[in-house]
Image 1 (cartoon, rainbow, N blue to C red):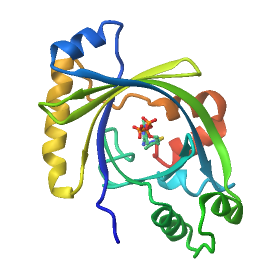
Image 2 (cartoon, rainbow, N blue to C red):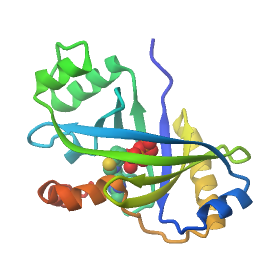
Image 3 (spheres, helix red, strand yellow):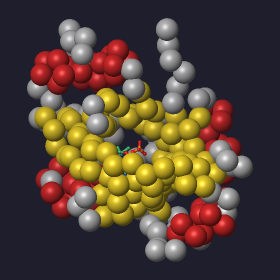
Length: 211
Ligand code: V4E
């Protein structure tokens, strides 16, 4: 069975210390706080991330994020990004194989990592406070990474391409209410991590216009 698509439309923002008061005034409610470690993997020659594909293990669960609308997401300065997220290992293995031009024999993710010689290139812990805005169907995360970096994101998950324009509209409208006005993309955790700890990898992604 093919699982329904998970399309994440999101916009990152920098926030000040009063952001939670502002969120609550806008009808957002705290859903919970979560601490999790993400470890990201790529081939030695970085063929996943150079194509803006992101394979990660989050606390034992595997996720694969790929550009959904390549022209609108990572490759422009548009502050709103759109990625498809795969979480079923069969789908992840098939998608990684397709991108790398091979047909993996592995049926599990740890076996795939070994088979393809994937290497961990980034690993960090996020302390996340998650808000929901029920009226708008939006999620807002306030993230603090363990390497001393904080970023917020407003997100809407949709199932079909037809729902993307309305999601964009709601996200941008909510950002205006939040006082987030910039039109440029704010650096996220990964961008900041690579710039600090993996400068060569960072430079290659810059040159490929992924970051
Ligand atoms: C898509 C992506 C990366 C994978 C991490 O995605 P992100 O949503 O930033 O992580 P996180 O921890 O908030 O995951 P969630 O819980 O929301 O699923 S790393 C880089 N990208 C793309 C990207 C880009 N093209 N340009 C910039 C400035 N940032 C990120």
